[in-house]
Image (tube, rainbow, N blue to C red; front, side, top):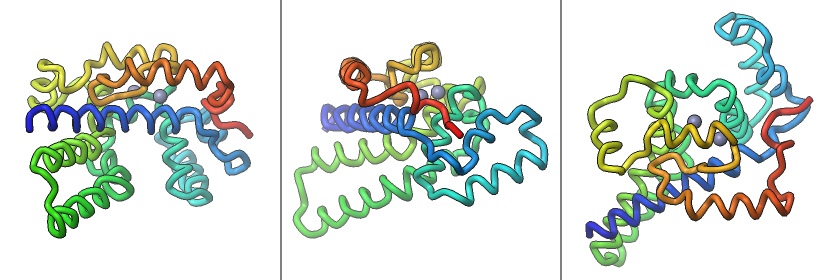
Length: 206
Ligand SMILES: [Zn+2]
Ligand SMILES: [Zn+2]
């Protein structure tokens, strides 16, 4: 069960990396004002900015909001660290880990899988649920003791390791503990060389 829990923890890291890579390079929809938000020259705590943000976000669905949030994270990384846990885990729970958890429960109810597989699934679901929260802790100075303890034993990555992503935006997309980055980095390099992922996707356009 312990190896299975670690495999689940690895898979959660891999999922964080695949989603992050996709969202960073997926083009934000043009013509809805994402570029005005992204390059906003004034005060971001002003009512004018808040109003603009509300207008733009009302024009798009949850997927494009997420796509924008990932891009916006690069020039303004600390904003993620200021968000509440509820905001950070909400979309992961709603779109991913709550349905996965219900399916796992259903599976256990109908035809119980081996215990190690359940442990692997729970570890993956917990790691997936908190993925964006873990990413947020990398952009915040003060964190709960459990985050510091998990970093010390390597279950979560350090801010220094995550900085490698922000320095290039071309590597180390996984943000839970980075265990899957040695696998994902060559995959990214290949997709980038082939032109599947291009720099044009990194910032919103008019
Ligand atoms: Zn990124
Ligand atoms: Zn980051």
